[in-house]
Length: 344
Image (tube, rainbow, N blue to C red; front, side, top):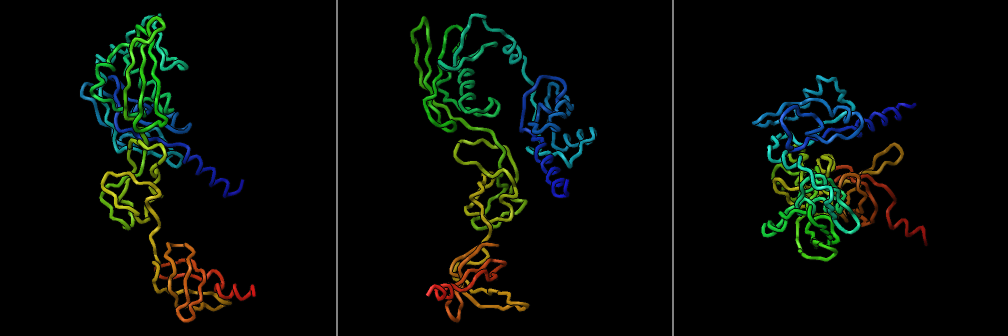
């Protein structure tokens, strides 16, 4: 195996194993495991899922990223093959007795619950219409219920509180979109007849990690490492995905102003423009062992390594040059007038 192959192999191991700390979880009293408070990606990360990172009692607790790192250090983790990311701390709340009791109640064996005519939902615990809608939205979006944030209209509270165990219920998604505003048609069936029909609108968002501004950033300002961080966010636009890598925006110029807490999309940050249209600049050309400097005017602007058109100040000949610095470029081909001459 070549050195390059070894390096690529090691990099792939690092990228494939990461621990992403969640913002908050609710757990019963007792030991808190790593898998309870973090998303584990990769075989090595999943092997650490049983690591005890804390104990929860009546007061609950906060587990910081440093706490997790210390526990994993004690376990002998090789950080060269594992990354720890996500929230700086996870708030662990104690699950209430009422919630545990409700979850332990079993539904009648004869109960049949359907999310829609094609997809049955097994009912092994007490469920309300709200629970059934959440299950159907999970199927519709392809996301787990824990990764969805569904906002209902308060006026639908009474409808949503109905039990779905006695009869057959149908939840039909009437919207093409998976996120954002989603319209639902709900029908209650009794003796093969529809006895109730409800139309409910919900707002659906998907949990994700994204680059977020930690301070206000002005338009055209170059984004520094301290200006952004990875945070947990909820997305409502299925067609746009924010930047998930800090390096995708650090060192680039903001195309739009950002306020503190705003998500940043990769398309909203670009390399800073080193040459602006109309700028006077120096273009260098290497001829043999000599470096010739030409004074030129930028016909178009460009960032580092961009190929732009410039014009010789004396002859007005146009040619292409590669941006190498602030108002500096290197010649990359012959003047356009020369090319035209060769075609004559």
